[in-house]
Image 1: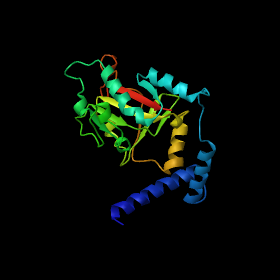
Image 2: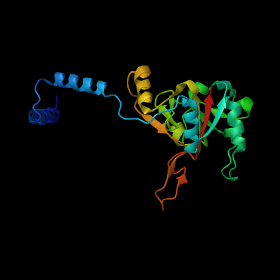
Image 3: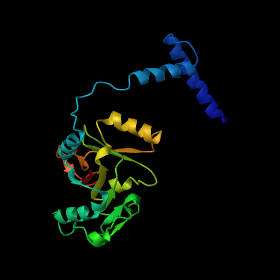
Amino acid sequence: MPTSLANNRTARDAVLARVRSALGKKGDRAQARAAADAYVAGHAQGPRPAMPEDLLERFLSRATDMESTVERITGVDAVPLCVARYLDALILPPQLAMQKSHAGVCWPEFATLDWAGAGLAIEAQPTTGDDRLGITGAFCGIAETGTLMILSGDDAPTATTLLPDTHVAVLRAERIVAGMEEAFALITRERGCLPRAVNMISGPSRTGDIEQTIVLGAHGPFRVHILLVG
């Protein structure tokens, strides 16, 4: 072990030993860790607001409050036509209008959808930063805040949620949970541990730094459109 690392560990152990002594704690570190884990397990959640039974309606309401737009669809196969219709309805200046011949990129899970049949040219690849449209999935939706939870991974390039002007997210209705507590518990249950990054998206990017005036698209997409499946 390098000398510097050994010295750091020795100093850390000395500090922690003094803290335990001041608190009157006895026993080794393994016992202390077990006691801490037991305490956390027994106090998993703090006070929380009451939530309605209909989490879907709550999510729709809160997502709209956060200036996301939402469309309910019956299946993933409908995504290309819904995206095409959404793009057609956007009112953009000519210099910002999206050309369907090079509309944008999508996550690998949507590579086999009939994009060409909807008149769209969508590449199943990570964004290079020049794409106007990014189409992604979502790990889950949080009803309390109308938030999308996005986990990083080889099959989920998170830049696609951040760099394009327009982000279209496909969310399955059964993946809507009540709050962040349930969302992180779902990660633990399905993944075992946290991924490298967890992104929370609550509507378009915005800032009020300049004269307290809300500006959309300051640090990410100008628009977030959710296609809710189910």
